[in-house]
Image (cartoon, rainbow, N blue to C red; front, side):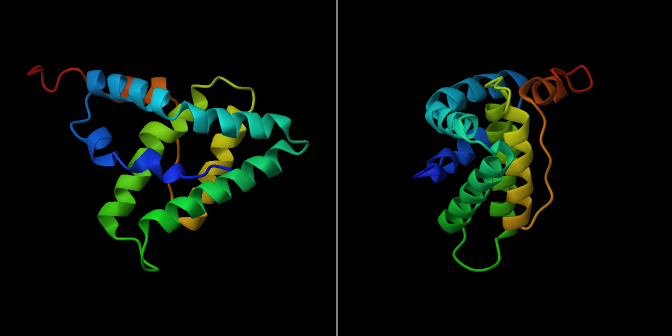
Length: 144
């Protein structure tokens, strides 16, 4: 389950570079298409479970541990890497889960956030795609 999920983060430099609304919209579309199978697997697994919250927590735990194994060689996460991984979660993974519009999407996002914060030793939150997208300003002081 969630085998090789770290591939979602391999192009983090590409996805996090020059974050502006039009580029974010395009990147989110590409990210969602490229990793749809992971989102579908998560949604389907939780939907089929009797105890959906417990299954979401187990998947969040598995996801966070696989990411930690893939990117952390020592006990401490380098600060820049931690920031990049957290931003990928905030800008792409959480919105990707929520964009499925599944009845369990928010439950899954909550569980993933809880386990991510615990395992990656951080304190992030999530927002949906529309909220993040709307947070980008098209103009800065009317210049561009």
